[in-house]
Image 1 (cartoon, rainbow, N blue to C red):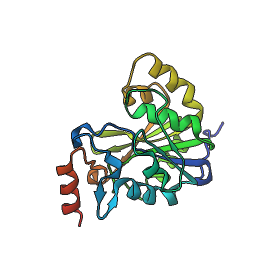
Image 2 (cartoon, rainbow, N blue to C red):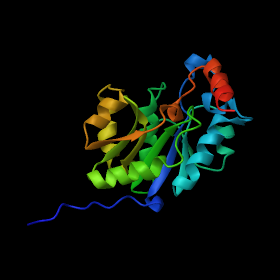
Image 3 (cartoon, rainbow, N blue to C red):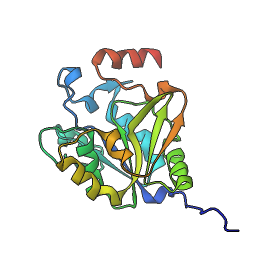
Length: 204
């Protein structure tokens, strides 16, 4: 009788963190979202500080204000494609520059994401033998919070070249495991300046 196949959990030293800050910020009036203040610091600073102990290296995906982002002392990479085609373009750029077997991504506008995000994604990915682990809060998938193998760069490049932009559709094309997190409020993202102010009030 054969035993079940055991897959290793990706260790921290094999995971690079990517903060996605390359959007247009349309719903914030066109401002650079990652540089908007939250508790006295830019949103990107919160994301980097929260992600740093969970990974071995960090990168930022940004298309504007590059000197400001480089001031955080980590590599900053612009989208691999022009005209702000969405988070998948930033993810592709991260995959192309990643020097570890795994990349984990988080958006810049969700400053309170779980402190055990990466550990739980990595554990689920290893147990399932999956290519991608994606966070889920309640009944909502959070596809920009994902851990994936860097070998998927070619697949993502072809997907974007086809004109598709939906991140959940692309991740569904691979061996994907969904990882539940509570409470859902940990994934509250600020799309407008009003929502950012509300987030600061609620979590003072």
